[in-house]
Amino acid sequence: MSETVLETRNLSRHFEGLAAVDGVSLSCRMREVHAVIGPNGAGKSTLVNLLSGDLRPSAGRVFLRGEEVTGFAPPRISHLGVGRSYQKTNVFLPFTVFENCRLAAQSRLGSSMRFFRPARRYRAVSEAAMRAIEQAGLHRQADKPVDTLSHGEQRQVEIAMALATEPSLLLLDEPLAGMGAEESLQIVELLKTLADDHAILLVEHDMDAVFALAGTLTVMVNGAVLESGEPEAVRASRAVQLAYLGDEHHE
Amino acid sequence: MSHRYQQIALLVAIALLLVFPLLGDRFYVQFVTRMLIMVVFASSLNLLVGYTGLVSLGHAAFFGIAGYIVALYSPEAHAAGFWSSLALSVGGAALLACLIGLLVLRTSGIFFIMATLAFAEMLFYLFHDTSIAGGSDGIYINERPILTIGGWVPIDLSNFVHFYYLVLAFAAAVILLLRVILQSPFGKVIVGIRVNEHRMRSIGFDTFRYKLVCFVIAGALAGLAGYLSAVQFGVVNPEMLGWHQSGSVLMMVILGGMGTLAGPVIGAFSLMMLEELFQSMTKHWQLLTGVVIVLVALYLPRGLAGLLPARPAGNGELPSAGSSASRSASSNTASTGGAPAGVQDRV
Ligand SMILES: Nc1ncnc2c1ncn2[C@@H]1O[C@H](COP(=O)(O)OP(=O)(O)OP(=O)(O)O)[C@@H](O)[C@H]1O
Ligand SMILES: [Mg+2]
Image (cartoon, rainbow over all chains, first blue to last red):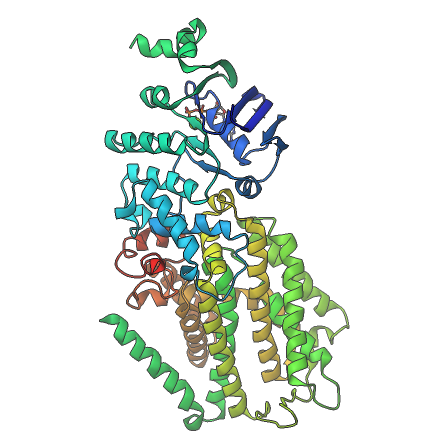
């Protein structure tokens, strides 16, 4: 069995009385896609924010490769090999696709307290950025400012930026939301490839993608884990069908 | 090719500045010297406001403290050394920026503006209400510092033409330094912070450290301007670190155009020339200055520099100013004109 990269124990986050994430324990191994699904407001994004350091947990603990990282700030989590994408596109809109990814790759220089040599002359950084751009299928858009791209392409930039930091754990919050069918297929293929040498926590509403990719499936409802395990077993679960998947079957 | 015209315009401007003291009389040479000092001061503030997105209303604190340091350091009867007094003034301003930065950079937005203002005002009252340095009257620098290189005095600071060239050299050096810094990894980080600090943190940048270093660089350069200003006038008073001074330099940056290297140069020159002109016309000159600022704010969101044709990408200029309105307005020019580094970055 491969190494456990991410583990949470009883992770919770309250917003004034509302338990957005409520006692979630899960783990994600190397070479595994762990999909998290659930209805709107189930707490999936909040969970990702707790893992990336964007939010601090109210209770519970987070471990990366066995080391406790509970409450670490985002830059520190990022340098421990965690890359994330956002559900709501969160990039540098006036910059080109290349500059978005170059900045992300530049963070791997260790320190950017470098004042004299032009940034464009750091070849390894530019190469890492181009690799990420090609992986995300954006090479034709590399020199375009992100705010001139289509919505679907901007979603690809989200993923490219996460890849440019060369993480070992990817936290992807609805990467396919807003993408066209063709782009979606392309990204699903990319995630399959990435799963060969990454641990991936995937929040996604697209069930076809989830069942094509997930090795483990967790269903969240009202902040808590309703069911977790093998995708087929979870799909078969009575509780899940009633609480969540059921909606789709009766459409 | 507008780029060509701009290069020519730049060369003409440099040539004019170089020959100007040979033609102009003392009053005008000293006036242009003052404008060049303000170019250094405004450029240092632009690094914060225009590039990093940190709107400081207390930048005169660093300008003023450097002036006070050289005044207090200068002996009564004879001249201080130029290099030692300069190093102390600039170093003192940098140290103060580090201390203030450690506190104010923990806030953001309107609280940051208030905090910078509050610290500068504290400093103002420290010098105004105590007798450390002459209270509200300020103190004089009886003898200007003396610049020696191994016993030789290449530049006489009390000669207004010599001093003009010294200030011109410093102004050019500061602009070149900023240009280099803005192309560097550090420069890319601070501009990233202005555009989206949240994402900068999530891709791994501890933005506080970069903002602090940026604040210190800006403080040190403001200190350089304050030093030159104190030496030019031979007197330092609390007005030098008051909120009027902070506001005036901020207006130069906004008037000229935030987030461009040319902006503060254009802003400093035009605001000071306008003030001079209006002062000669009416007692209510501040009213006229105010009208001009309002008009520019309304109709030229990218400042006077926005009137210049956009230059090709990769030259260190940004496509847009600090405000979000101007950012979206100029974003469509980015692909043709001043796109942020990208195309050239892949060579
Ligand atoms: N910053 C916040 N302050 C207050 N409440 C919040 C905050 N963020 C999220 N919530 C609430 O927490 C709950 C979970 O939100 P979250 O965004 O995590 O859901 P989600 O599962 O990602 O939903 P979706 O599928 O719509 O993206 C919601 O009720 C939401 O309103
Ligand atoms: Mg969500």
